[in-house]
Length: 486
Image (tube, rainbow, N blue to C red; front, side):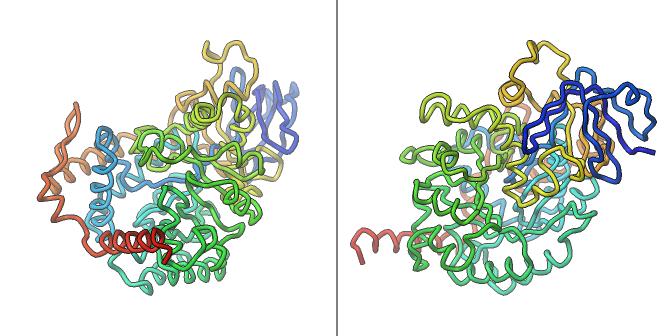
């Protein structure tokens, strides 16, 4: 018997020819797309384990969240009204506690809440960099999502030896890579270009090459991003990655906000990829001196760019459709209208996101023999009328609330808005308990109307000392050297 058949649906494939079926059928067997074609009369009476009437529905490839952090998802809303400097202080403290295994209960509740929200919003794949990813893998795997994940590495921030961090990364790869029927892939996650020494970058490159895994990092996020690269005896951040053997098609660079045209050219020449996360920077712009992420230049050079929610609990939104709209709005605001087409945005949500993670042979489009990762939207409502320019409707009008069915690896994770792989009420209860415990342990006050941070003395005592001081002093020294051309 057929596993899944969907008939009479509007299907947007994002295949090589951008085929669209106004009334189409998809047959799924053994986790893969078996057939995609125009609907035939017999399709409506075909027997299958899942028979889905696609009338009034839109079928899309599953959305790809190309850059995320999940462990603090249960704290959504508490950071919303902080300043950027306050946010940095609070997140530094939180990360340190997570690294000391003091907040495992919060991390597990957060990953469960994130996974639930991703499924409800049509996200089938996430690429996440976390502090305790070993806590998240069983959750993501058992809930049915596809994920690339790995432990955050930084020898300038963490009070942990290089050898211990690399051993942990190696053990994570050996334990979790290609698990859960291949849906979980391990990555190497050097945090960013400001918090690693050259020695650590070299060892990261060696680890990635030995295991043939994606290297997921933050790159050119801030106006001072290149300072540490020069302290590491590199020309700049991209030059340093090139020096150590990381500027290649295994590299996924999140943000790329302060890049110039030469940076774009070098990234494209190396077949490296970018994860663009517009909402987090539209909400938490760290400075006013930088131009917006150079999206027009990236499109001109045909760079591979996926879209990511980043720390979705910073901007209180799990809707990846919104990132497509935000991508357009911010680019047009910076450089005038028509910087990117609607079809390009839909491609970035799907196939290009998969390309950025080097999994385009598995997912990102609806084609025979590819993994059956897809979402079904209810478009039988005024929001989608008239039904013209479907790419515009997807990138400008659609929201996660329109998603009613989610399929990953041929398994139906949600149908008719009912999530089938987890108990939602149980997750809500676990999240509420985790937040209550967190407030008791940390001194945060979290209420229905807002939140209040712990006192200054408490924050000073909780802040890690060596790591941030080391980074600040290193960057300050390099800044002086640059100023005096030393």
